[in-house]
Image (cartoon, rainbow, N blue to C red):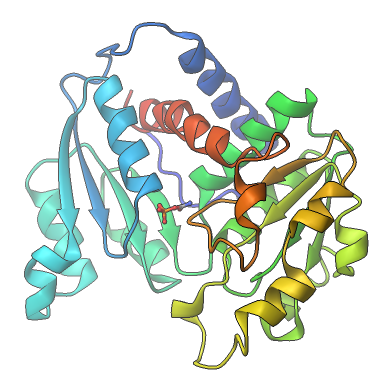
Length: 294
Ligand code: CP
């Protein structure tokens, strides 16, 4: 029984075994394999989600687990109950594992120290989003065969991005070459010692161009002076996409601000892997749930 709090402290070997197991689940034609039939899992989302919440639920149900869904807005959190008391309450009812998404960074570690069941991080503040990065690595491995030596440009709102951080920590373990590209107001200075910041022109010369959503809800008002100007300087426009190497793949964790960080026509272009990333989220989360509870 194992938690998954982040990829920074997970070994390359452990990451590889999750990716391999996801490949196994992907190859299964049976939609339902009830290996977790006697297990109860709670999805505890203290922040909104579409992809992560639904693909965790799909993964859990495909493995036959009993699924309980918690949404903060409809709970006693609205009466002022803390995250800690909420999670301990749900744990007290007998769950075998919890999937959790949190707005503040730093709370997850505290919870993990006080909760007995495995916890799986579904995104905590701007810290980590390990299952997103796992599905991203899975997508890259499918496109290129291996991760070693791949050049990966992560473009956009780096400072607020847990996706950028989890990808950085994981990709570096495999010998991939990660670079960032962001306007000054969206750079994370503490990451500069781990990966260089490059120009947009340089960022586009890569095997993988991963665009990030401008997370307006996490920034002070006024960070994005004009969506048009952002698109002009940092957007993957149709013109820029047309100049990419033909083998380059385009990724984005979504949700997407169409025509801000990526043009509408590029989202479902032949080089885009944005919807395949969502497909890959299910087998990845099956592997993670199985690892947590079997
Ligand atoms: N990529 C991702 O985490 O999307 P959701 O916020 O919709 O889960």
